[in-house]
Length: 112
Image (cartoon, rainbow, N blue to C red; front, side):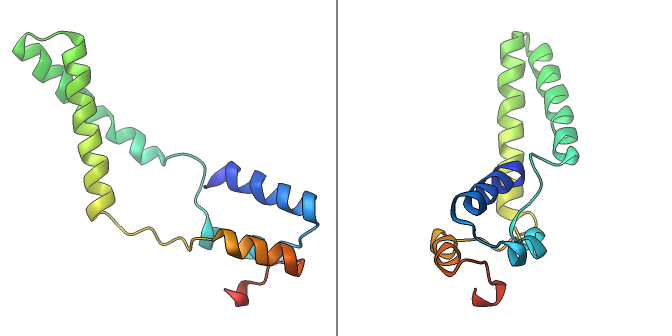
């Protein structure tokens, strides 16, 4: 989870169990990304959509055909980006770590 989902989850942990999460908040960006996709990913949708529409138009296909082509192109791009793009540098947090923090009463980054 990222963005607001992570904020809401850890706020609920704090409210329910009184866990001090100050250490986690100091290192928040090490663990969580922003909400949603980057605006750059939004711009990536435009070329495949235009290409899909152009291919469908030249082939005499319907709008649905152009949409299908665009969807395949976008999915292929995201698959390739996940496979060969820059690595995800966030440090995952396990359920065990959350349980340990609740049991200890606070989040200690050095216990990771």
